[in-house]
Amino acid sequence: MTSLDIREADGACHCGAVRFHVRLRDGLHSARRCTCSYCRMRGAVAVTAELGDLDILSGQDKLTLYQFNTDTAKHYFCSVCGIYTHHQRRSNPNEFGVNAACLQGVSPFDFAEVVVTDGINHPSDGARKGSGIAGVLKFIATTA
Image (cartoon, rainbow, N blue to C red):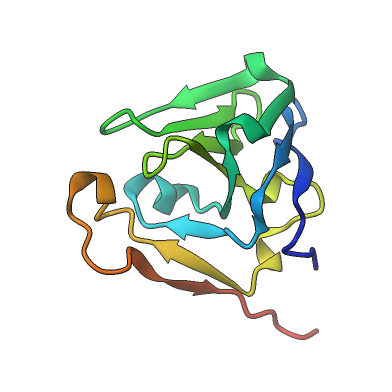
């Protein structure tokens, strides 16, 4: 299992066309998922980096941008293998959410619990009341 305290990591999409280095603001402690329509389908665990803390090392020309609804969030994925690598957040446009599964040595199954944010009632829509947390996703490994 990977330490949640890592501060920097190299990452890549599935095929390796897109490679990056990221400095994580709070290590893997910021891991979360979201209930918005896009994230529900994507299913990735994202960790937090500041905008200036993600450096694309190769494959910038292979990144494809997807935006929807308000066009505020910017979701990037590899145009070759289709893997989501990172996104600029709508909730805080000064942050990237980075796909934890793209980080070298990290698996989404390393997290026993992942906070799930309420993306359906987004704070930018003025609809949020309460904590903004929709729940917690748990992974319970079976024994062999």
